[in-house]
Structures are given as C-alpha cells and as structure tokens.
Amino acid sequence: MNILIIGTGYVGATTAMVFAESGWQVTGLDIDAGKIERLRQGRLHFHEPGLEELIAKHVRSGRLLFTTDKKTAIAEHDVIYICVGTPSRPDGNADLRYIQQAAEDIGFFMNGYKLVVTKSTVPVGTQEQIKSWIEAAQQQPYRFDVASNPEFLREGKAVEDALRPDRIVIGTDSARATEQLQLLYKSFHCPWIITKPRTAELIKYASNAFLATKISYMNELARLCDELEVNVNEVADGMGLDPRIGPSFLQAGLGYGGSCFPKDVSELVMTARKHEVHLRILDQVMDVNRMQFAYLLDKARTRLGELKDKNIAVLGLAFKPDTDDIREAPALRMIRELLLEQARVRLFDPVAKLPAHPFYETVAVCASAEEALLNADAVILCTEWTAFGQLNWENAKPLLGQPNFFDGRNMMDAQRMRGMGYYYQGIGTDH
Image (cartoon, rainbow, N blue to C red):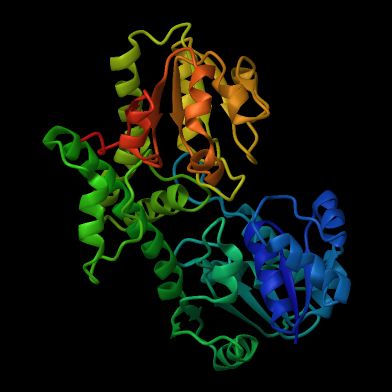
C-alpha cells in the first residue's frame, strides 16, 4: 500500500517518517510550497531532535516523496492520512476548517475506494462529519471508509514515541479498514485498542486532559509546600514510586503549554458543555495553569520590589526543551507581564524565536545565555534546556547586577546555587 499524508507539520512529518521507516512508500501533501521544497531537500521547518535525519534518509532512498498536487496525490493513493492542524477558536472549540478542506479535497478527487484515516486530534464525532464532507464533495459515489488513529507524540521525543509507541488506537466500524490498518502497523509490537471511532477520539482527549491535571495538581501542591516548608520534589519522588500514580508529569513548575494540552483540555470542556456536562476538575486545571507563572513573578516582586526599569534575564522561551514550539508557552505570559510592568527584558533560548510583533520590540533577544545575564537584576528560568544546567553559574555571577535567580522549572540545585552566593527561589522547593 502507498500512503498519502495530508499536512506536513509536526504530526504529518512524523507520521510520514514512521511509515517510510516501516518500509512503506509515502507521499506528503501540503499547500505550502515552501514547506514542500524544504522537505524535498530533507530539511524540516520546525525543530524536533532526530526527525530531520530520518526524513532526509528516506527522501534520499526515494521512499518518501512530497508534493503540492492534490489531484494526483489523492488519485494515486488508497490510504490517506489527515494530519492537518486543529487549532482552538477564541471560544475554546476546535477549528475544523482544515479537516473539512482535506475531506472535501478527498471527496472531489477520489477515483476509487479510499481508506481515510484521521491522525489529527479532533472532537468526538468528527469521523462522522468527515464522512459527510467527503460524500458531499464526491463527483461519483465511490466507496470509502473513515477511521480514527490518534497520535500520542511528545514534542522533543516524537521519534522515540513514533517508532516505539506505548499503544496503537484504531477507531473504525469497518472490518476492511481494520484489516488494512493492522497490516500498516504489522511491524509494531505494543498493545492495540480497536474500538469505535468516537471512543478513539475521546481516548486522545482524555489522555491529554489527565496529564494536564497531574501537572496542575502538582503546581497547586507546590504552593502548599512553600507554606509548609516542604520540598515538592521530594513529595513527587515519594508519590511517583506508587505504581498507581507513576513518576511522570509530577514536576511542579510554570505550567504546561504547547500545541496539545491547552487546546485539548479546552475542547474536551467545550464538548462536555454541549452535552450539558460540567467537567469542574478540568475548569480548575485550566485556571491553575493560566496563572501559575504569576506565582513565581510574585516571588520576584517580593524580592525586587517594583519591576519598572529592572533588568530581567529570561532564560528559555519554548514551552519545553528540545522543541521550538512557543504556543501557549508560560515564558510568553511571563514576558508580557514583565513588559506591562515596564521591566527591561533580555531573552535567550537556544532554538525558539520570539514572535515578530510590535509588543515585543523592546525585548533584547540575545545570542547566548551570558549575554542575557549582563547587568540583570534577576534571572527567571522558564525552560529547562540542558545548556542552562551546564552553564558555569559561578563564573556567570559577576555578569549580573544582582544575583537573584528564580527557577520556574526547579532545574537547579538550590543549595549549590545559594552556596555560590545566589538568592535562589524555585516553586515549592525553597526549604
């Protein structure tokens, strides 16, 4: 089987890579000619460790092709994966315009049976909408199936997650679709869930919402730890040894961000409201996450007083290390508030770029961490890049105007930093 991937962003490029690595012939389709040209050269348009090398490998072998030609691509492939974006609308609902466009293109250009597989994260019931969009666009009544096959990729770890998944979820009512998808994934050895499309769609949202809940729970607990003079990291270590809880996503900090958790939690809440169900826990999860950055900023105000005209070094912009994704990044919330309070902000991130917007024009974007630290009254660490942990902080101390360090990711060793003469505060770890 030849596989077509519609959409060559983070999910699409990773999906194309994993099927090519599994031995299938794959074509990536996108309307963005610039992206396609870069991919044809084996180059990615975003940062994801290890992915570009595998893309380039399969471009060279001829197993992985890229095109902007919708008509030919859809006609020549029997298995079509939809991997386009589903961003949040202002009201919190998922924007399905790109899903609808892909479905209509498939319907219009199809020339025989197609298996259409939704890899994008979509609201429960979208598989049924895709069917209707395809049918409405068809020029002739060709048969087709629509299945759900959600992705469970961690940004920064996408290659590992794609090649060694912890589960494969297939949602379909068609025996033919099930058989084809089992063949596509025949080389993978992990648990399978074969279920109804709506169940598969909900598994994705429920998974991300639960992980977001763990993060916000630990962030609230960290505030209590500060009051009780208890180290939240030690609490997390003790909790994580319980196999019913596990150690993942128990790290207190500035909160979650990125392309998945914020929009997926919001969409799940909105889906529930449409059915007159109030997911109160998830409402609180979003509220805690929205304001978590302010907790650390309050600590900085207590130490520095008024932030106006203070020199603040912000280390890290991406919502997590090993990615350039700044969507819903806590660092952006931090920078916005600092600018509103008329602080002077100097920023460094090894990969991520500050948005080109007039609001950020006063931010000094630096070429190194050391440059960002020059004359700083305080350092606020927002992303736990390995390079920040490896920096010689003893040598860096003379660069600062005042050695104040606010660790939004609890990355540094508090005793060691204080031993070097820093005023150090983390989140729930200052004891």
